[in-house]
Image 1 (cartoon, rainbow over the protein chains, first blue to last red):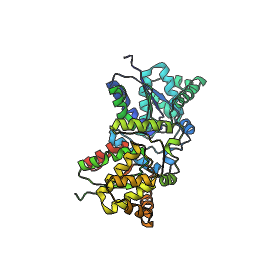
Image 2: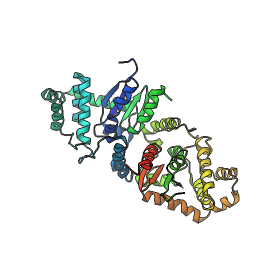
Image 3: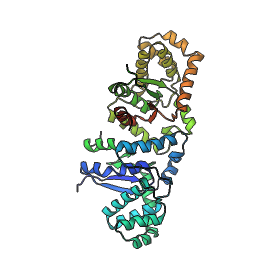
Image 4: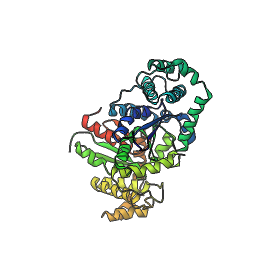
Length: 202
Length: 202
């Protein structure tokens, strides 16, 4: 496409604001002739690095947050329903993503959207590998090859290495974006990212 | 002005996002024929209630935050400089505000702007009562009466009571806004507040 640097989008499938950002970031980037690299990570490891508890468990802030997830989704015009199980592990989904990404970057993107939507609009339990493989299947992808791949050390290491790399770049929450070396945290920073792309930094 | 409910704006003079919001909230409210009640509170008490540490001291998140304060100010077009002393106590300034508010609501608003700007653009130490009284003086207000008033139990209790009331409403950080019973946290929620005012809730 272009010789401009890609935007790197670090996310966890079980992060509500990551889901909201996932529905907008590609379109925003394309407007300014940019590609986006999608990088699922394990947010739990970032919370450990920053010493922060899970948002929804924080007194006062946790209750507010659930209201803000819902209102932010309505504000952005994105279908959303807080899932019956929260949080859950996104490890299998992240492993399947990196395997697919090695095969076909575009299909991996479609798979990622399908996982996000399965969890954040249908409340499916994406921590269950069977559910992840069902999504793989519904995308017309090879279930057997995926099942084998996500059990390999190589794919397991990939998720860990991507997470460690993101934390080394300063990631403490998600979504976390790197735009030409500038970090942006949160779906609510998309307007700042747009201004950054528009002006080349401000 | 109108029979519509006022927006309540809870803030701490030493909160950078409170300062950014203070430069925009009145103008935004007026556009939708609303008044704003300004309510300085002690953010330290809210952090205690939610069990949260001071933002800038959190590993990874703290470093990001300082960058985000600065970038958000540029994004919003507001003069800003991280003060040499941070954080400092805003108790004397809050007490002076409530005393002034009992005399003249409009002058209290002007004083609040002056305190915010003294700290967030000039780096003055607003924890020093002498600095607060100097700002009172520069606004053409009665320094002696203010000095006497802020030492009274009534004014001391007022700050504590306003803070407790805000926490009872769910405040865990600042700025915190109540708009027709709906809570909004953060200068970055001003666009959601605008949509709320425009549509009567969404």
